[in-house]
Image (cartoon, rainbow, N blue to C red; front, top):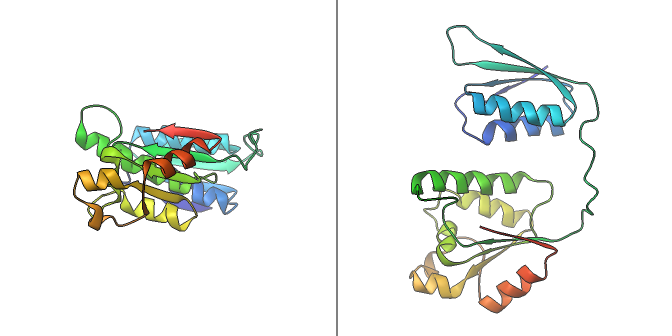
Length: 194
């Protein structure tokens, strides 16, 4: 039985760690987490992949242990063709509302999840404050660099980097222009805007 120790890991790391073991073909997995959100997220993942899941809590500890055994083939594969192109336009350096600290955490988690998907975007374009995510000090930079290495085209708005006076600091992607960005985004089958 494989053990995934996700104690102290924030969302979505427990799910990503568990998904990696599922993809290795592990038939029996135990996952240790320390919060109810991780229990819920990991349980849904495991059940969706055809595992039965049993939860046990360790007395006098924060540990919650999920014991999973493969019982079926899991989810039916989506009927959508796998060759459709996805584009993502990122216009903000945070995800969500007015809490900037939470928004930064959510954006980093969002980009981290995208880098782990089997169907990654063909192109990601960063505009307006979104260009700040491609700077060396960005907590999400590593995920964007990983996406580029995996084949996602990273376009960065040159007008925006000029406005913020950061063009020479861009650490990933290609400095681009509105026309190229629009051509790539509108040429995709599906576009997400954040």
